[in-house]
Image (tube, rainbow, N blue to C red; front, top):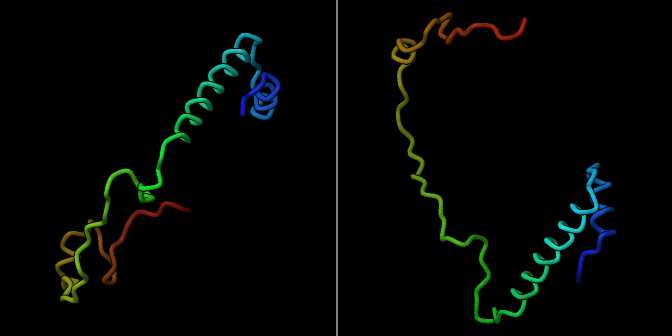
Length: 95
């Protein structure tokens, strides 16, 4: 598979890019080089390689949920800038 100047012109039109003839030629060459490299990767024998979703082994480290007492409302309100009827009062952001 290779990219032609017409392909580059079509994509440029879709992206509303005004490319000069020199830019079209340069992009065509660069895109073809990328495709040639991808074709080289297809030559690799990957039969013994297990499929992965990520290059590095990544796992979430999460603690178990524990039921425990929460802070009493009086202690929580000590940290609130303003309080009204047992709720934290904040400045209005909408009129």
